[in-house]
Length: 253
Image (cartoon, rainbow, N blue to C red; front, side):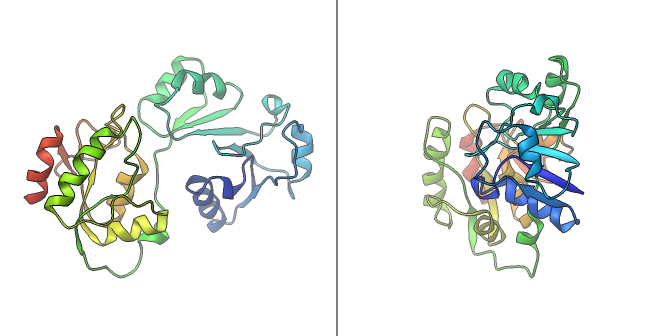
């Protein structure tokens, strides 16, 4: 089985390499287009570069995504991925009309795509790279772990509360950017990880919450949360808070 990806792996440091590794580990040939293909190439031209006739064609958002002419008429199933489904949703729905299937990463959006006339949308929440979380248990040296953006208009709550948490508890360098593997290492060295979502979508079940759950650290995240729509329970799989002012007290407990 071969999957043709219309994006280069190196043009998306997070998602495409993870999917490529997962498929290859199961014997699937995950083939990415190369940079020599012009942006106005036809689908037939792109297919000629693939070593085998693919079983599916994947399209991810990236810095260099190819959209060949004739893709909408492809006899090979086409799939587009919408990790930030909540952002520009109406535009994403229109864009998805070109593809046979649309992958949405957040609960409730499959139904919204279906109501808009797309029968091929399906829910596929974020997942972690298992290899980053396997192995012997590490010492939990941080009281609270944190990895994530803190600048910009959607992250003002983070910018306000992270310094307050750092003043009360031992934390990693929360101002620094980390790779996925480094993030896993930080979470595996943390007793607790606090999730402060985007100000415009605080209920987000983003990649970070699944990484925390995989690491064995205690996840503290805001309520309501998409996690409950996915079957996780407050007080069982994570601890929820409803106001940021509760954070320090919850961590102390």
